Image (cartoon, rainbow, N blue to C red; front, side):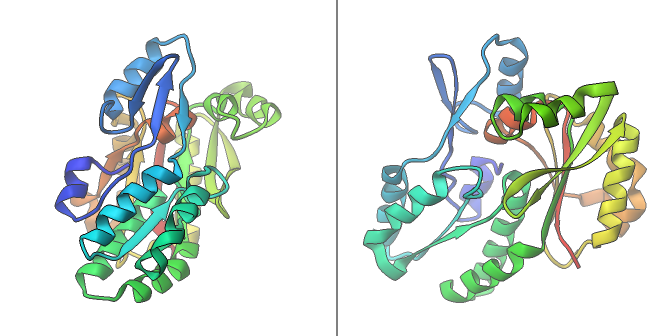
Amino acid sequence: DILQEEAAKRGIEVLPLSVSFGEEEFLDGVTLNSAEFFKKLENSDEFPHTSQLTPERYREAFKKAVENNDEVICITLSSKLSGSHSNALLAKKEFGDKVSVIDSENVSIGQHILLDLATRLRDQNFSKNQIVRILEDKKKDIKVLALLDTLEYLKKGGRISSTVAFIGSALSIKPVIAIEDGEVELIGKARGSKKGNNLIRKLVEKEGVDFDLPYILGYSGLSDELLQKYINDNKDLFEDKIDHLPKVSIGSTIGTHAGPGAIAVAFFKV
């Protein structure tokens, strides 16, 4: 969930996953942006399906970089949620030490802040091996917390059981989830968005945000209204950062499973 234009400016290559509605296939963030995806999600009778990156797609990107005398750090989606990581490892074999593959053990904005840390270190002239060591260490400190409107999309995508989804949908309960050890965990339930926001607040306060490292907020759907409300209700949490908090719209790869109406925060804990 980083825009292709921003990635290009920062010397990052984003390999987009594909998302399909029936026979129609799109590249996340390339041939289908976030707003277009959620419009299709609302209007389509078919549940979208996402496809992992193939070894050949990784190999193409690695070969291009190595031929340009670059070294590669490839940061993948959690290996417990996507086969993309194992495919990246397969592609890496022919490039030796020129390519390092890191399992982010995360998704979306959690993966995003690990990428932000990597580019910060690169721009400070850390070596590839130094960056890899730091990322492998610091990824354990990433916290991703999200308030979903429903667990229905996670159930349809096979990321949680029907039983867990039923518990979440009962009595208008809003589920709060986290990424724990690379997997989606239901960590709390709240009657309505307000109480869900309060639960996220308590969890953020408990962990503490390291504002010296990257942090970001995200939302899914066609409007960031719920995210703006969360920010306004929790101004004190973000100290003097309130006017320039980084925010992103969650795209189709993760939006397929989160559904519309979600808000999320990602940060490195203190």
